[in-house]
Length: 134
Image (cartoon, rainbow, N blue to C red; front, side, top):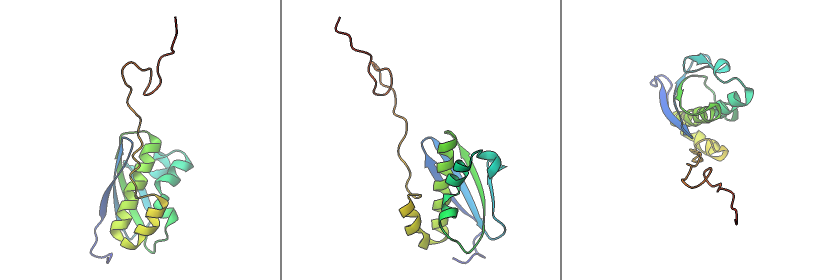
């Protein structure tokens, strides 16, 4: 795709109960904002920042991107992985050749694991009350 005819690319990423909408704009300096804050202020730890920017760190790209993300729901880890999923999907929309690399790294898969609901008669999702013979 030619960069002149693209205004921005929007995609959605999900993890647990977190939903992220990412807009990547080719060209210009690399800037990442999440919910109106810069990346370092939104994600406090380095592991969360590297998880969120995983697609950019693992794949070499000739162009720079400006990234704007709106994320809601879930906790910090779920939100970081939802951002990673959204950015990876947007990069594949921008350049289809990246699909194989991102798929091998597992960035395009929506991780289906979530907390299991508690069932009645049990203490937690699967933990049963202590059994007593008498």
